[in-house]
Length: 494
Image (cartoon, rainbow, N blue to C red):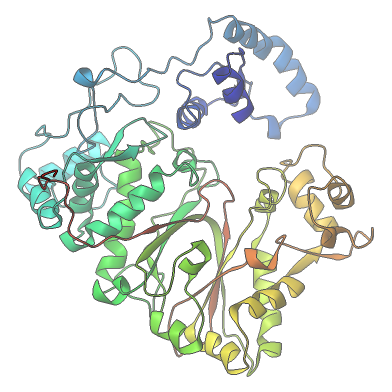
């Protein structure tokens, strides 16, 4: 679809062909790349679940006419362009001037309340029921975001409530301090958590992250990873149960992200969340800073230009995850094969983020318990040496790799062979040292693409590995600025 968007922006008429039910997601993706009201044509049924003969027949009978209509200007999506500021509409707490109607909302759409409207009164039960009915809640009880609560949430920080951090690429809605705070109150966050929420919103506003992909069909969900003194000073859990809800700050901030994506990003089934199955929200993962210092390893945030001691939030969208349990061994040579097997096994269709859906962007995340990190460090291994060993051993047969990217998933055009991809310069030589279909090939294109974090029970030899969603929510890190803001301070110029 990006090619079509680029063509339209350049002034060349184009049309994007999508499956039924994906119109809203197509509009959101287009808006995220700077195009409102894309021209669309629908297939009949899903192209991956029908024979070539039927697909071609239906395409000629039904889709071609839509393409002609779209190219001649009579088949637009019907999405609204941004409304003038004085007519702006917004979901509860979304912001103020400059917001827009929901993506895909046409004439006669139900008006959204503005940021300061009273949207519900009554008992706590009645308010929660109202929020569920309007789609503003995740279904669990929320704390009503009264004006007093939201103002008290923002007040200690000194931030201007109406400061805009950016525009939600998926919906065109303003991302304001007010909207961040509204959803923070709803999720049960504390005022001192606001700088972390702001950093997360800055990630969402960053086009490198690609917020507009947050509702794609695989149901990948974002994981926020926190580094720096903020971990202990705000009380993040980094020990036993590090990926489980229960620790208040890890849990409430994780829930905030899901609410913010829903209420400001528009990622609901009514707008453009197309997750086939989906996941619940992921709690914040905090790295064990003391363990990192003890073994002499840099934090995950160092991968993105930060130093030890910097407060940083890193966000990445992750697909599947798997425990690597009861890792046995007293030295690296004994434990690497098991860890490598877990890394190799986590990649499936998402290997197309190396070629197909992305380009060298498959970067799985391996979370080591502190005792495993110390086992490596005791043998003198750096994090880079761990990655190199995993790269050498986390491999699968070439024939399986080719099936995953081009036959079973049909996500790399033409069902390519790895030797041809290497010959054409798309993958490094390590993928084609010979043409044996059973030769082992790596699941990442570079050792540095195996991301490593340290957290969890310090007395257990377990690890956890995630596959990432490539460019659809790529690793993006932002500083957490906990200094008092001077947004509302008067400045006297000399």
